[in-house]
Image (cartoon, rainbow, N blue to C red; front, side):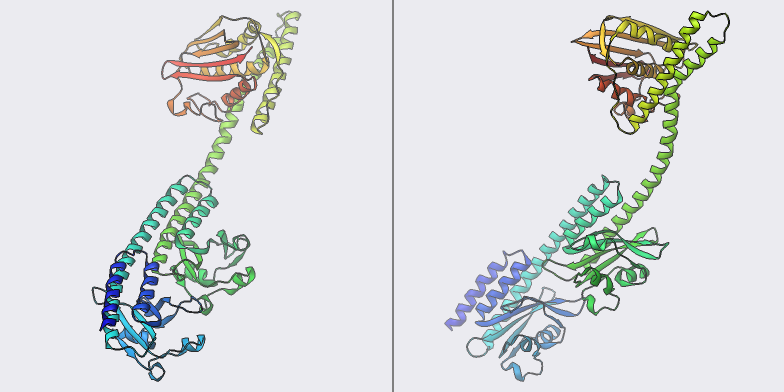
Length: 562
């Protein structure tokens, strides 16, 4: 009697403890330890039902030589019989019971003498598993033990169901967080390999698998190829191609169905050649097709489930299908981006050509005009000599400008020829070029020299900067206006202020005005001009800034150490 009271007291303590344990793996281990203790048995096994496969799966098998999973068909063995009938079974002599399966004892050398097996039913009276207690330490299991185990099984069933709900909730939350994180990551990436790598890495961590790959179809060659492969043999497998007609991947693509195979060695669809070639033992595979519209363009494949559950299930299949749809979106976006880049590249070539023509227009126009003047018989020989010098200078400038364009395109440092230059002489020299460009356009050219001393600079390149700005200003004043160059000295620096009363710079391009091919409403596009201007100023250890108001005009500030 006292022994029964002691067992009941233990049972109450166990019931209280069970209500506090939330992790399923910890709970199952605790249940097994306590039931063995309460029932005074040598060992116990806890099976959970896998209703999809009609099997019992041993989640915990106490004191087994190897921690391996046992699977029984419902109806197989004592545990299977209990799960099928929902009846408690008390076997006093296992060897002489026809329901007893001796396979495990034969494999391990263990001897089962007697056994008590109880079903675990949830609140809806559905059998969710079986607790099997083996070998009473003294004697056999009696009616009292049956009552204790029945009560224990009832408590365990409730705790397991609650833990499962908690675990499923955590799993869903983790999956949602992973998908949200994945969406944020891939939205900031444009290279397809980077997107698929990120997507695959996150999904492998969440699904707890050893390896994963995105395998795409090459329709021209009729082959699969690995676009991205991660895991122990990722680098090796990435080079392999194989026919569309073979493997679990081939079956999935052909039938447009997702599937998992938990024992690939006994599945005729498994393509053993790849695993053998890279020497990678493969236990199980999950494969989902990737659809672009209604066409299968490839598959996502996950290999060797790890973690607490080493077998794929329907939840894994659903999650993998969602991830595959994300991969499809990424591939579609990458294809669209590639087409857009091709279109943009053609547009950029046109923009660059327009820009270069615009930038070279000034020296070409000067050469043309002065060459025409050389044919005028009324002009003196002295002036013609001067014009010839100007033509030669402009040809030299033309050559230097083309060299600058090439240097800029190749990312090379612009060569500087720094000399002491007089500000007034510099402005006087470039003024005729500006005036000719403004001729007939109703633009007033104003020069304000608050500082007319000297500055160390490359005069040709600074002339290039200012002529570019004056050209832009002229285009921004289609109905005429005022263009002003003012030079002042501030804090041991010469400051050039180049202003116009034009249309101003649109807000949407102010932040990228000095980038190549940014357009500001000019007739022929700014192209590389401002990008090169900025680079020239910076090579002078100077700074260029801009202020602009829509409809009121623009002012560029260039400051250079003197």
